[in-house]
Length: 180
Image (tube, rainbow, N blue to C red; front, side):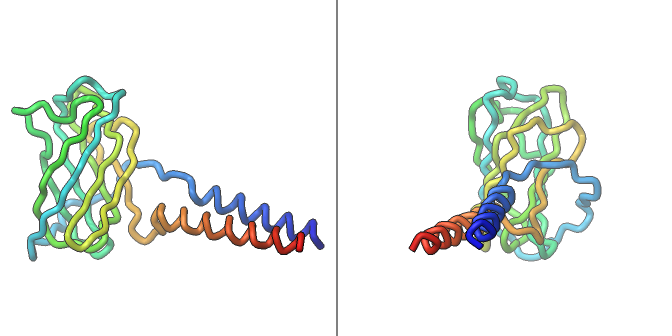
């Protein structure tokens, strides 16, 4: 009986660890910019960190789009500024962006067009109706493709980590009970 219980607890522990793995960005095959609401206007802070593996600076044109699970979409057709050297290697750039008021931000896509193969590390977005959320890229953005994350309808990474901690706690208590 103890072996079966230990096997089940170990399986639960390993499952929780597998669920806590980091998500990777992907190309958006069906991402559509045609539906952008123009209702109320809210301000968002977008902080984009550039990898130390990225070129010294980029001439690439960078666009960003993010939103919530209810169809509220914020789109910035060109967040880079050719007159300034932004998106330099090992740096973070903060942008103030206005757009429709969204609830919890659950997706972000970046679009890159240019010769430099810019590599973002993270994109952190905060707004008036949303907890700050960070999307970890750590990879080059393909040229002329919307590339990013859509976590709408999925449990967030913080929820997965919480469930991992919960499983660890239950496993620990169960093992203690076995020895009492």
